[in-house]
Amino acid sequence: MKKIYVISPSELSYICYHCAYLKHNYALEDRGISAGITGELDSIQKKYFLGDVKKVDNSIPDGEVIDPDFKNESFISKVLKDNKQRSFRIKGKGDALVKFKDNTFGVIDYKTSKFKEKNGSDYSLDLKIKTNEYEPQLHAYSLMYSNLEKDETLLRENDKGTKMGWKNETIERRVKERIEKIKEIEISSTSLLGLVFVYPEEIVEGNRLNIHFSHTFQQVTYNPEKFMKLITDYIDNLEQEKVPAVPEKCKDTTKQQHCYMHSFFFDEEKLERINK
View 1 (cartoon, one colour):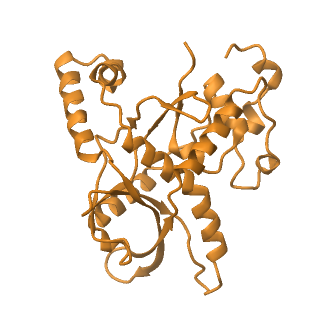
View 2 (tube, helix red, strand yellow):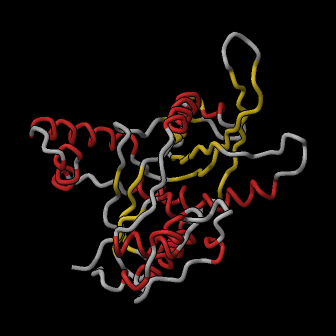
């Protein structure tokens, strides 16, 4: 049986082919440390933008922002094929979907990230670079929500409750609830992709620590053909005989791009003794 690659939308932004190879062929991955405050901020901004899409940006056609979340757990796509007919799935959880009046959908992702300089200097180039880097992530979510896996047997096998030994009736209920959620959020046609950059602007004086946040919306051109070429190139890399070299930009420990696996956990001689 040929391998089915399970690809996360987030790994397609700021791609490191070295790390991708280790993750998919050896299950070696630097997941970092999740900060609780970041998750809380994400939750607050998701709730704020629900409802009328005009809260995101007035230029967007009339529609409703809906929450695709299901118990804070990931969804997975059906088996898909790249341009060379190799199998893959997309697995992840998006921030928001927009249901438009013409029954098309939009995919939106929120980024708590700087999008302008406070001293008034031009920050547009940096914002454009960030938008381009996150573009594949949005396309991945669009593809996933357009092809959500609905096979109950597979969903049951992969349910968290099955892996943790929960009661059968609990697992069955969870699977039924997931199917109902899929019916609510599955996409028939994508008409918009976009990023909402949110950043703290200033502290509002009062008897509590209140912070004023500003945001900006950046639309991304929907280009599924370009995205499928990226996926094909990505899988080409995963199927190389040897692990790709560490990128030069990742060797610099002073840079944000740097991954600590490169410095502390990677030993090519040991890797050669591990079976893929």
